Length: 205
Length: 223
Image 1 (cartoon, rainbow over the protein chains, first blue to last red):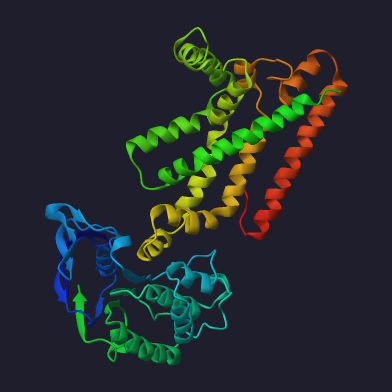
Image 2: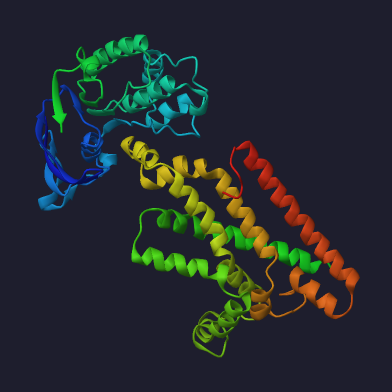
């Protein structure tokens, strides 16, 4: 169970506003998050990941406190065991497809399986600059899954992937999340495409 | 024809570049992350040699490390080290004088990398140091090479600062740029020309090398 109750001031083009979210996510649940641009969806994911600190609040995961501003508790991102799919993919330009996954895990059988799921098995020696947008996005998803995370945070993870591949990938990922018992939070601008995958939703406004 | 000044210059530039690489990388990394008053002050101090006349820097180093005063006296008595009119003094002055050429390009390149690169690495459980070595450094290779070459080439051409702290002692502190000046003073234009041509050739080849390498990296060496 993930319990989040946080507050963070945001600077937007409309002036300053406060992001306030109090919510619980059962283990293994898949939640889609949507809302208008600049509402703080990405900031919310980054707060959970530990890349941004909230001004006020508490995050607990399976009774372990990750963040408690009152007690000055802050678990560094490295120790949270989260997978994060970035909106800009954040691929490492110096690494090939396989090196991205090897950087995350030493489990070769798992790497091979991920490459097949992402349909990147023939592109293992390619660097990101030689991949299409969709292939880059699939690699970003595979890299986040490589550590078999308990919690996976995905920021617009399917925006560059074509419809046919997206449906196939969503189906495969659904099975994988179920197998790993991964709790997933997905930010999306087109939440209806995730209906088959998700079981709850949050609207951030 | 005495080529010792050339070897001395290359030795000085090599040692200075290696030392600055070791000192400059962590400082540039630290400076690239956020702003604070301490960072602004340190950056201003590091940048000073770019705008300060070399003779002024050399003069203050001469005063600071003179065996008759303060730090220099203490170093002489405690460790029997003398920086004034010695090769170690030239290295110290060169490290200070060339520091902005090493730190500037590296800091600027690190700042241009998206924060999400480090964050992605942290989310995979990697430490800050591991991320720096495996992710950040390999992705600023062109700027790293530019910094190394600029530092080396700049040290080759130092004159005022090394003359002030090192003087003109043959085989000890008489580097090529001083040898050129000394040869002209003695009306030995042939020797001055040989020293100058060698320095010109070395720096030209190095700069061409950077341009060629960085062209393949799709990045201007002047960025």
